[in-house]
Length: 114
Length: 113
Image 1 (cartoon, each protein chain N blue to C red):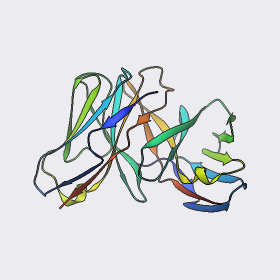
Image 2 (cartoon, one colour; image 1 turned 90 degrees about the vertical axis):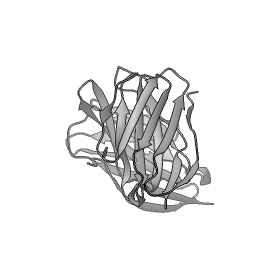
Image 3 (cartoon, helix red, strand yellow; image 1 turned 30 degrees about the vertical axis):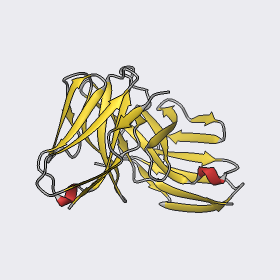
């Protein structure tokens, strides 16, 4: 079974801090994704990566950056955390082409910015 | 921007009844996927239906797709308390070099025992 592991289930940070969320997958998947989930809005894509050192902006990239130095690890960075970034963050991975592949999700990190 | 929209937002049924959730979307798709999310957990993939398919089954799940109406439905038959969860449809959107999924806001299903 694919395992996607997010480093923290709960995280509390202060406004202005630089925050790192880590995600590791163990199935050698090429594609990795970061989403945030807010009530009534579903999942919104922040950034994704097709392969090592590759990254593409999703629908809401403002205030975030990412890093993928190794295939198994995809990091989400909040450059200067703000209260409107309080949310559930979900990481997912997927095997590369063909495109009809499901995404596999971690259990999420519930981030609170005070 | 969100593409998939689920209906209803919430559904409460008795154990043993069938549950039907609907999803509408706006643009052409390559495939449509359904996911389940238990409280406090990540999403789990349930089923994928390609744009050239009209119906697909997996155990107690049945998914239909009507591309002319840009809609899909997920039917869970003989529901169980363990089916209590949020259900999301997701449509793929072709981008340069690959695809991404666009998720709806979800349907919250509660199955009462």
